[in-house]
Length: 292
Ligand SMILES: [Zn+2]
Ligand SMILES: [Zn+2]
Image (tube, rainbow, N blue to C red; front, side, top):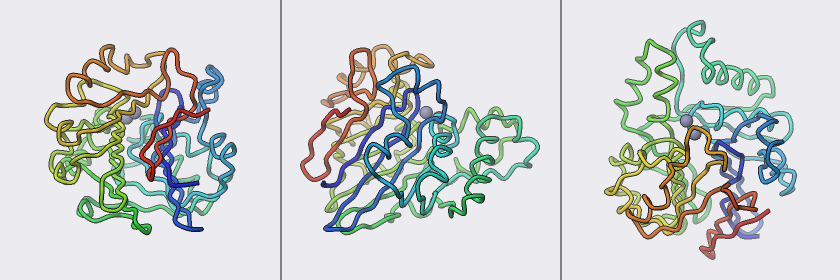
């Protein structure tokens, strides 16, 4: 099968699987891993955890897991994978440097430490990348290039300066990692996770005409803006959100908001009448299919 990107219905949260192929070589990448909460999956049969997704696909090893930030709905699903499938490397960009005691009572940071302990227990290597690599691909795999896009350095440094851990937890969306995939030097897909589009303005020259945009923050209309979306000029806007409207997301008028801004067709990982478990974008044929 050719190279594809799957936007998985993990309920409220986000997990994207990138499968790249060249002849008999493959590269398997997760960008975030959704939640590990069993109740979340049990509530709705359209949802699938990252572990069950891999079993269904018959995939036994992952080359990279990129963690965009530590919110539970993006990070905790990794716990379902460790010890179950072979994971070569986990990549972070945020490195909490506060004293551990002050972090322990804050959910996202406690989860981060739990995940680090698990990575060490299972001897999975992990590393932190830095913003200076913005303009160079993090991974080159034949004709594919994967870039990590980060907010400007000052913002990352300011994030480290928070003394109030709850405030840091809240602000974490603003410093999320984004991923850009190119094929034959053309943009294919931008995964923005929970970062507002305006925070990527400093790399806007890299984002021109990108057919698939995973829109920021589960379809939050406050996270998109005219200028950036016009540059990106997406054909498809993929929204990772649930049909229950957790945290009032996606925004009630989200389709209209996007329609006003650009020509993109909006697709939800889960919506009231949806039947699919994941949305697949075929990198070579440029087609989108809804799959169960
Ligand atoms: Zn978040
Ligand atoms: Zn999120």
